[in-house]
Amino acid sequence: MEKFKINSTIHSAINDQLIYANKVMWNLHAPDLIEEAIKNNEGCLSDTGALCVNTGKFTGRDPQNRFIVEDDKTKGSVFWGKINKPISKETFSNLLNKVLASLKNKTVYVRDAFACADKEYRMNVRVINSSAYHNLFIYNMFLRPTIEELESFVPDFTVICDPNFEADPKTDGVPAKNFVILNLTERIILIGGTAYTGEMKKGIFSVLNYILPHEKKVLSMHCAANVGKKGDTAIFFGLSGTGKTTLSTDPERALIGDDEHGWSDKAVFNFEGGCYAKTINLSKIDEPDIFNAIRFGSLVENTAFISGTRTIDFSYNKITLNTRVSYPIHYIHNIQPNSIGGLPQNIFFLTADALGVLPPISKLSEAQAMYHFISGYTAKVAGTEMGVTEPQLVFSACFGEPFMPLPPTEYATLLGKKMREQNCKVWLINTGWTGGPYGVGTRMKIKYTRTMISAALDGLLDQVEFEASPVFGVLIPKTVPDVPSDILNPRNTWKDKNQYDEKANYLAQKFVENFETYKAHASEEILSGAPKVLTVS
Image (cartoon, rainbow, N blue to C red; front, side):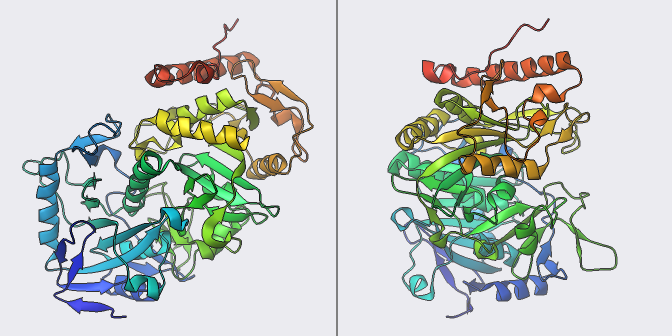
């Protein structure tokens, strides 16, 4: 297969539109892309062979400058608001033409890839990049077609990403130089002005979050998933920093995937072919699979080397706390064949509660599960972002609101239907603080969290005694094998019980306030899962 073509053209997903470039590098393998990236001064190799790059100004997604084209297809179906902001067809067309013009004199890297491991729902994605390391990211993160599959490949969706193209806010109809625009009718994702690779990944995820539930009745989920030796599937919902990747990467269970999945009537399947894990303070002891995956072919973002070496300093945080590595899923030694598992028996909602009031593990009723799913709670802690001096509560509907084009209740209703059909057990896991809030208490030990999750998966909690939280109503186990009983009820871990009660009521009130947005569309059953704000003496 040719590696490049001079003065070549690329076919897009819609109307076979032609895209021109000076040189087109087609479907290069990882070593070729790494060679190109080094030749282009895009990055350098660590002592393990991983390619290390700096993504520049943007080290995370910029949701304020993400848009969806409003047209006849999307006008009545997209949940418009602060997350899904509309943009006109004319503005999109103008920017598309400018980006395409900017590519004519450049070398571009084209990757044809699959999204969705289940062939019944598979989407063919063609990604066009102006930098080699972005194309390596796509090679790592999505499903890689065979040579035979590439010969007949026709794209269903096209991603065009040129970080060096910046919009002119004065004339281009967008508020900033950077932009991500989803055109669901023309089936194009257009990205400019930002080099953060995650924008491509989440752009494709957003498209699937529109197509699968709305058109296929498949629940799309921001979650990790794995399978036990007995074939039991578990799902891990959670926002960034709550432990999705870490806790789903379990040497005793086969990994389906760490971030994006679909739940059909027959299976749970991965959307991707790779993992995108946080590396800040990465530990070989606590996260051996991720640590050992950082080798030749992996892409590490925004870290630094230990002085005088090529050894990555995982504690380095001067660029960002959102340091990341992408790698193909087969870099994890224990993976589920074909990235497809059976229907789930256990669902875990992960939260990093910086207030230290939620139990480390608790069991949810169906109503509570729906309520917490729509709420999508976690917390940011002081120091993670400029201006954050107190723990900052975050509510993100369906544990992935920035990527959900449809109304949250549409995803929640579909989840509820599937939970009832499968009779799933639902658990709330607090990977955050205990013994007090951030700054006073301590972070829950990962070994205890893993042990509690394993106990739930192995059925060891089926016979233990539970007690109900007076505020949140969730059921707290009184004992968990190999876990100190005194940490299970969070109130018992606080020296000042009155302070705990105040913080618990404060968080309960925030849950209630946040849910006002969805209250009118929620059933009485879902509303019954809300926490109860108590009078503190």
